Length: 356
Image (cartoon, rainbow, N blue to C red; front, top):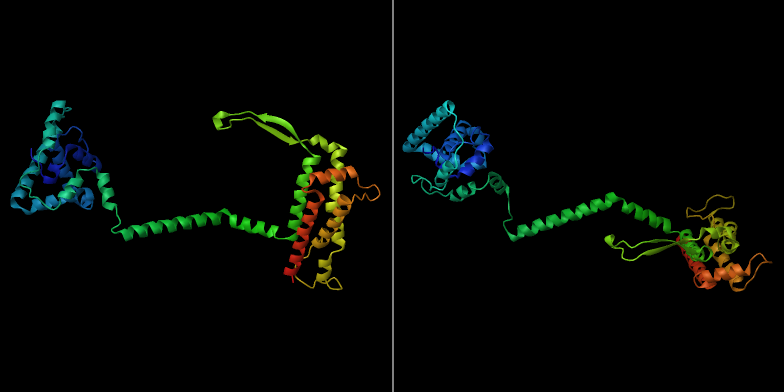
């Protein structure tokens, strides 16, 4: 039985089955190839407005239009329509059994048959070859647009780079790192921050002397996670807090490096006196410190030299043993403390100059 459309006749049975599934054709599983061609031809003819814009059926409608323009082909189309009607009536009256493997073997030569001789070669041979591929691949290929020139490729790469750079900048701005960085810089850009950093460094060195580390436990080796050796963990000995060996050096350092210099810096506040008028009215909008950093640094330097270098005890208030332990714990002893006070003094002077 001949097909009513030459484009359908050129398709393999597997392609026709895929087309039938794509258009929603019913009861096509048991059909032979010729019957499936006629059923698809009838369905597509009855629903032409629906499928004319579908890329999968462009060649079908072209072939149908060529067949409709020839009187001979019109007669063939009429005969094919009659055959379709005959097949439909036959399908209604009988139930077609499942095809045996022999019938499938008969279909294979029919699927591999050459196109009809009455169909002349056209310029759509490439499109016909593409039509043998799955419908999804054909639809994807029709929408794919490749760069035409190397300049287009370079422009596409540049556009992608710009998009990635813009995305990274957006993520950085949304993360809040800019605000956190600015806040940290503002907080550290003061003389008091410099003085505090120096004091914390001294305290860190002193802690190792007055609150020594003691062995606590061991973390065993775990080769499964890459830990090949055991790790001994040491923690500060908190029992030292209740001994005189902790409080003697700690109180001596606090008195000479924090408390006494802070008291002098509060009362001998040259910056605050300069920025206020005779009646306490502010005369400048520059920053005013509650504790004058310059006075603090000078007093700390004097006390350090007198106590730790000259050994003055102020009538027994300072324990020489505590002074020795502090000298041994701090970086470079009392000389290192004097270097820290020199740094804070220079920072105080520089800050006063910038405030003018």
